[in-house]
Length: 417
Image 1: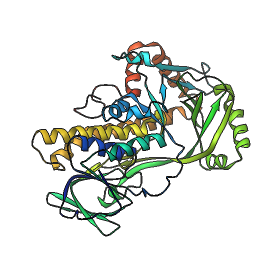
Image 2: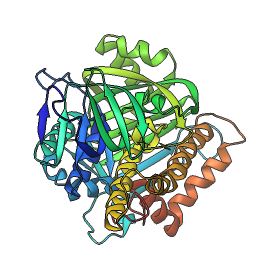
Image 3: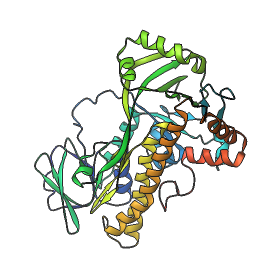
Image 4: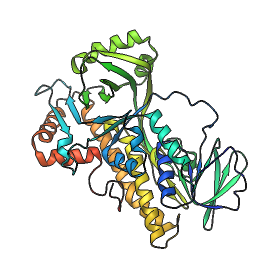
């Protein structure tokens, strides 16, 4: 791997794949493709000479995604800082009928080969990115171009000519946009988006808990939206509280003592007393789906393809499913003597991921609509659903497999992850 401040003498090189963005999705894709023997260029806006900004985010990496990180040699570096997810609990906090029914899935519902394998791992953003950056540096077939930004693309026969803000061009058989919700690659490909603004934001913070969490992620559905505590190392948790737009932003800017008082007044009975650690934050809740995830010589992954409701921590995991599918399809294309970036390869990727990704996004949207109210009409439906999930073993096992992304074909048509 060559970490370059400038693109030098690459105009004549035809990369198999050029990836815009080196966050978790882009970096994981680059590592997987390079390990498969492809020539990969990664265009990264980060300055390798600069001190990286603090990143307090945490990701719920479900078992299917974790297995992929294991296969790429990354997961072992995260073991000391990650918290295994041993269970997922959902509670309906409305007021009509039957009190507050809940359902709890545990790793025992997976019925996997390894009885100790958890449903997933809560992983901090900073060590995850550091592990991926380290893995990228060890791949000889990977060119990491930083700091550099995408400026545009011209699609020509057999290649995409990628223009960079430095004035340099690079050529690749396939261009992948792993560049986030406002993806410049998606815009350059003239792919429109659909979706809706929920009119809500999510307040988020890391907190110390007053009682052990036992590795259980807990979610309380309230009429205004969910409140979730996701377990971290040392009986700490990352919390997410759905609030009306403006309220979450205001709470995040309050002095810590005031924010803690508001938090504990509302949820101490559910989660115990909580003490905020570090800086709280907020982000708007938006559903956004690209109407297509491919264009000639271009593919989208992660938030560039879809921004989903963060219920059940599926955002990053949907991106990892894209990554796993694209790696598998690229390997199969090479094995069969096909061409990377060809129309056939892109059609296969679109078939594997467009419907599944959009379907998951819409399912999460439907769950949010069903539970984020206190209607006398919807409460019986919710109660019956939670009771069925609690009592019917085959349904429990199916939902546990879906939540942990361990069902067959989870990442794509050919994956075993």
